[in-house]
Image 1 (spheres, rainbow, N blue to C red):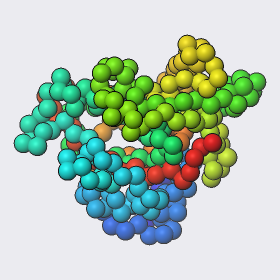
Image 2 (cartoon, rainbow, N blue to C red):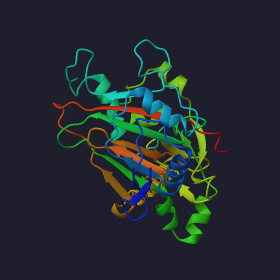
Image 3 (tube, helix red, strand yellow):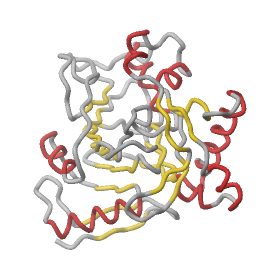
Image 4 (spheres, one colour):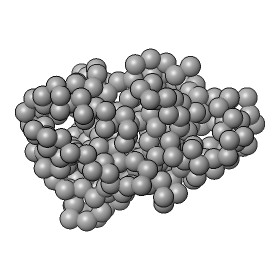
Length: 284
């Protein structure tokens, strides 16, 4: 096969053609895909009717996967997180249900797992069922946003550390959404406000909804800074909006790209399966 990489936006995001992810990808083709990921941050693969086993197999080519407990009713860990508004009987879960309220956090700009001591490298989302309209996912490049800042401003930010806290981000939805036990399982963690890509050295902001405050800075001032930087990074010129088709697989770099889901008519089903590539070590 011949891999073709087509940019989708000015600064980042690209569509990958010439690979069939339902079968093992040849080493030389995978090398091109992996290189494109480091360059473009967001990769779109159309017409990939994957099952979970195929999605896991492709995802593992990039590294070990995170294990998620919450998505498995039995309590055991799973490598595939099912993001669905369907109940076990196939009916659409009403939007006021606690499960749906909890998932509205995905509509805030964030990076997956930044509230963990070792944040995720990447996520891969497979569209199994999509609504006729709405439910898009938007991505924002924190690389181009960092590059657009003045040099002295970048130097100031390079020295700062943010505290990321899952309880803080979910508290923005409802202060009572998480129980004390839930909060104790995900204590706050520290990450640099600016990170570097180990493959190419490119630097980027690292903010989002889980970023609670700036270490050593007054609370209000730090949160105002995080808000300003997130607003800067999500300006229209730094955003790619993906309109889903069934069979799409989209992969994104959590180290340098924010994302958020967009709402859709709650009467329509939306089922997405996600795999998450684990990070390789602490950020500090």
